[in-house]
Length: 269
Image (cartoon, rainbow, N blue to C red; front, side, top):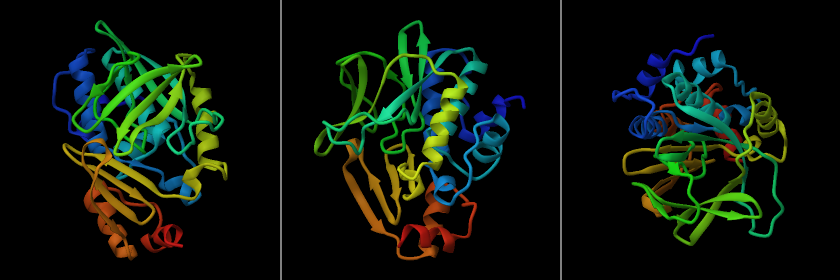
């Protein structure tokens, strides 16, 4: 199907100028992470994750759903290309929960490189452990402060390492190189991430939304609101399907594809 840019922009509530420049990229990036939450409900309940544009439109744009990195960044990449940006899809290896000396895992994350007159930028609206609201300069060694966090890129053994400042210090999010990926690469990563028993999405409900000054995070029944750089401002354990439904609706704007009782039973055991 054809991608309807106007419907995507309406979904994220973006009303700014539409030009292939940094201002447009930054505005759309911020609007996207506020409007379309990161969520991995489908793998958790055994539903396939589809990356064709028709399925992504029905789920993330027309439907009251979010998605994870392959879905989110495929949508963003398609929109950026239609506007006229030069966008390259890249693949990352997640390190968020890994010990520093742990071996590298598979390429199970999708991110984007956007080439602008000002230089190359990293755009990513789909890293659900630590979303960032604005594109980051693809620049090694410089600390980059955003409204909700501080980030830096380092290089190690030929890999770019993206880290976020957290209360305990720097924490590596993922590592990647600049080898362009094609749709079949993402299909393979998506299949692993959504079906392999070792992947977290088959066992844990992970959701995140980045609003103007708050980071909303749900991990199974723990709902937390974080301030800048991951400092927890509020947290609550959800005690019932009713409370889960309230958070999904009021905070994330998501209607799950299965009954709330079934979803709550999966995450509260």
